[in-house]
Amino acid sequence: MAKIVVALGGNALGKSPEEQLQLVKHTAASLVGLVAAGHKVVISHGNGPQVGAINLGMNFAAENGKTAAFPFPECGAMSQGYIGYHLQQSLQNELHRQNIQKDVATVVTQIEVDPSDAAFEDPTKPVGDFYSKEDAAKIQAEKGYTFKEDAGRGYRQVVPSPLPKRIIELNSINNLIESGSLVIAGGGGGVPVVQTTQGLKGVPAVIDKDRSSALLAANLDADQLIILTAVDDVYVNYGQPDQKALRELSVQDAQKYIDQGQFAPGSMLPKIEACLDFAKSGAQRTALITSLDHLDDALAGKVGTLIK
Image 1 (cartoon, rainbow, N blue to C red):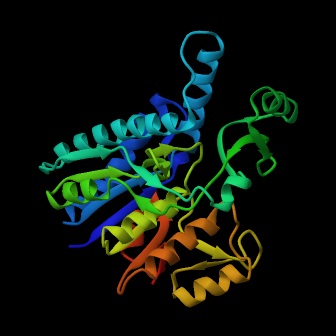
Image 2 (tube, rainbow, N blue to C red):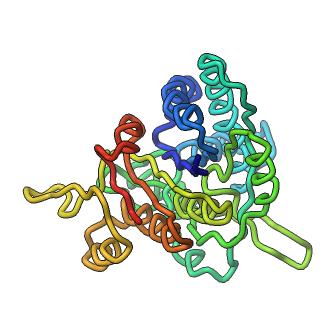
């Protein structure tokens, strides 16, 4: 029996409550397979589309005098609750269908960051919808948001993405795991907070969920980190005639490919770096990158990229 942290991509969760609820039913079936095999499982997830939609909706309502303005950290916490509710419900239904008795709990998670992190000077993490150049410029002028062009698809709001330093609710998460619960934690990378003389305070930023998942896995003394993304394997020379799937990588080889610039900064690179951080954090720890649809095949070594 292993302790496994599974990181789900936020884009895999849909763009509306209806779409998300349908998608997580499929997600639940794969994840409960790990539970049925006897593993202790912790689930984290992204929230880029969801927190962006919540933030836009709250701002729209505030502008029209319907509600008070909601800061970005509060929107992040809302997204954890909303996504956690859907995951909880779907996991509970799947556990019941398979006649497995297990509690499911979501922990709204705060993660401490360094207020002097250089990321606060260079926002890079996209959230919310795509805009034309003209609309983005208008919103930027009105609200002071920062927008950047995103892979030829339009302009998106970007916020700082500082490195995670400490998981505030770690003891609560660990206690739930040890009591036998299936736990959802660190949603959206956690709500970023800083330590002040008055205590913890939320800051407008988004922590990369793969990096926070790696920190969570290391702090929980997990055996494996699984990052579920849109592709079955990690590739070198991706998109070129000589692209090659990597089935197994040593820490040294992974670092070599990073140094060669093989992995895109906005997509695969942070996943590889998170896997490296976890694999180097303790003996016998491994990390796996694959797609949700082929998780079973990846666990059997048929697809996926294992880093150890």
